[in-house]
Length: 230
View 1 (cartoon, rainbow, N blue to C red):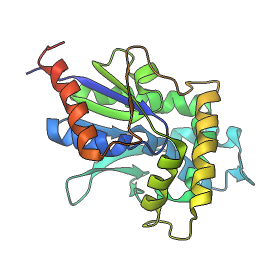
View 2 (cartoon, helix red, strand yellow; view 1 turned 60 degrees about the vertical axis):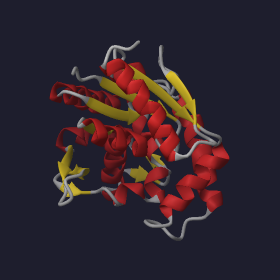
View 3 (cartoon, rainbow, N blue to C red; view 1 turned 180 degrees about the vertical axis):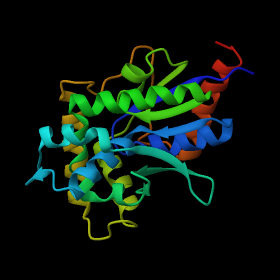
């Protein structure tokens, strides 16, 4: 049975990471959350006072990129979780103040260059499922299966709001909705690697789909390619 590369792109809060993680586990593949990598860089910038107000000091961050290490290491449950310079940062990177700043950091060409280089290196490990904003268009343009996930802004904001209640209970739905809309604009309009539907990608609008139905649909698409049924 051959292994394949699966690229999952899409808007924020469309459940990319959830389905990508489940798919990788089912297939025995490596799962990489590329968004977590950009969030980790953003966390570093926040902790090291690289934001002037709400604006990133690009020059300062670029100069520090060589000493920033983002890796995925297994936790005590065997899950691959993001680490920033050796420290588990899985929960910290999901907080609202990181969500509000990550699109700025991800738009910096030198940051994307560093992250894309790291992401491409994971492909050497065999079967890979990676989700993000530019996986099918930039990181793995020759991926065997490319998906683009979307949903209405209202549905996505509600999902993210419920998720964030665990890590940031003070956040409001209005804050989350505004953040979702703002990130859509920034992700789609940035000069470097904007969010687009990659050539050949299957578009999935999951506004009215449950996780189980979505997973089964994507698993079928993956198996069709693994077993050369298309």
